[in-house]
Picture 1 (cartoon, rainbow, N blue to C red):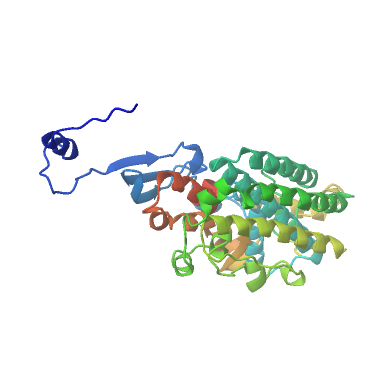
Picture 2 (picture 1 turned 180 degrees about the vertical axis):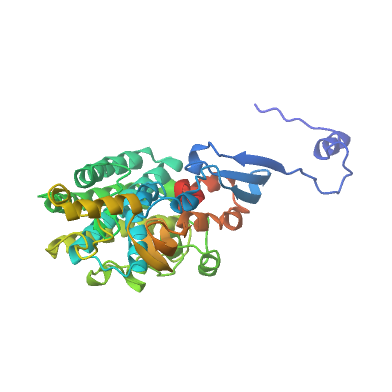
Length: 416
């Protein structure tokens, strides 16, 4: 039998009104300042969020950057154009092949140099493989952030297959440094294209199985649907690009709108979202991986013959090693390019490419010679993070983790 308790009116009133407050007044709460990061696992690197909380509701959220600043842009001004290629690996280090490509095309446009069709095809294949690799890591980390451990295991397993192909082509798994001004370091190995094609065939069913773990998952949808909504106007105003922009319904993709490296030859769709929430950004990246496979298979089907570097660019691209060892003229040419750098005319150029995280841009100013006078990098992660104060305000602490995972940034290119 339940026992009921009763209190005198005075005791009930005392329980409802805290000491120091007059009955009928509103409760006065103090806001708490909380620092998330720079060593928090959900900030995906050395990002620090300085948050102001009213209970569990954020009233303010300021990203604090610069913990990984290395001065890449100033470093570029003190080395030759080719010597800076390894530094581009360390921007979005999940997609170094795409970074190499964007930087090389910027310098080649400065030199008014057109690379052969075979070189363009190799670059497109590697860039799309890098897109799949980067999205797999982003997908796995996003799933892990919201409690889906299995997705990370699926993603890493497929990413490992890509790394083996990268190593076979470039000699490195992670920091590839594959591109050179005027071409690539070496041609594709015998049978490599067939192995890439085989990877694509077996990858699509596994991708569908991986996405099935999340797409209609009740817990995942509760954590992402309607969370971190970015309107189309806000996405444009804050300079968002890539999947974060397309997730808000803006169909901007430089591979379609300003094609480069032969992208105009290939058929693919640009996925866009409708609500601009975390769930839409997840769906966009999933579809982008399907489209990347579609592009790769088209490139392999019509892979061109010919040289893989600009043979007419004597003062820009180093000659093949066998010629360096057998010809005095080629030896001198190689010596001059290595010591003085590829010779560029005076001028300036800005080129931007559609990278996995968004638009990666390089602004290069030359006064002639083999070293840039100025170099500026437009990093998509830096621009994408600028919207955090707007979309995090009013959300719960747990929602911040979902928002960060959905933005899929890399601090290496953000801080530079």
